[in-house]
Figure (tube, one colour):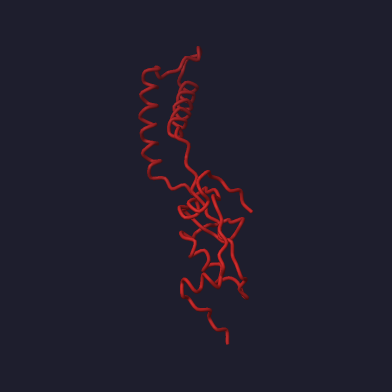
Length: 148
């Protein structure tokens, strides 16, 4: 069973998750609701079991300081590369501190904008729910296909 993360009520966590799967160790999670995950499971099994456990996943959030952290690293690397290639023997940076600070702000703003458009695919399991297959079929009215 995957590690379950969260402090909300497990039903609320399950119902508000981003992705769902019947696999307890998924490599790919593509179902956007629990019912789709149950149908996917049913399409893959013969004979049908009485129940299936569906795992609910929430996309992980990026740390709040992601843009700032990367902006600092980029400017630091930029300064080092320029100083190494074009600087004097004394090791002083070639970009003045005031310009370096402005550069950090501009890069941080650009990265912050890019991150607002980012889609995080790393997820954590937040809840699970067991579905009774007979009750599920009755509720969603999709009959069992006759194999004869």
